[in-house]
Image (cartoon, rainbow, N blue to C red; front, top):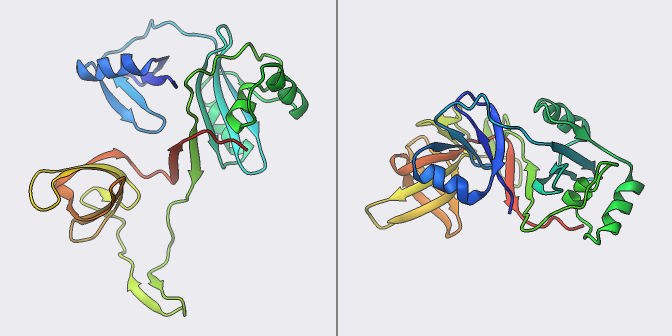
Length: 245
């Protein structure tokens, strides 16, 4: 299973930990959720002397998706994996800002490393097999995070029907009661006909009555008062899967 990323109270990155450890820290109120994707917690204390480890970011650019893997050079454990439809150069700029070594490699060597370990063909596995540093990999339980760039909406002042005529007005202001369309929220409804817990993407309305796309389907007319932000809109959609090609 993918490890959970950890920050101390000064937002310094610490060693990724097992999800069970993260749950215990959250339960004991020693940490809080910092972001949902990738799942990251922030401790309520500083850890300036925390140990570091030999982690390496490995990327494999593909025609449509780029594979990303965070690998422990010593143990071979794949700590985190993802596939994103972004360019190699955009990713390199972001990944290098982490301070960890970033490695790419030739397609031939990547295929050789993958075949030597009898691994399936997938973007994130190709990333883990990139370069000469590739150790014997431990991929047990890893579920890659699939990331799709959706952008930040449009500048249209109104929506149109199939004939191109205006059909409805688009509000000028994106934020309503601190929320914007595309945020992921958790709504805990305690009274009325829609009692329950709903988690999903929200579509805001100026009235403060929102729609939520949850596992149960589209839940309409949920008051903002019941909504808690889980992950602010950042222009990407997230899902977990295998990403086999």
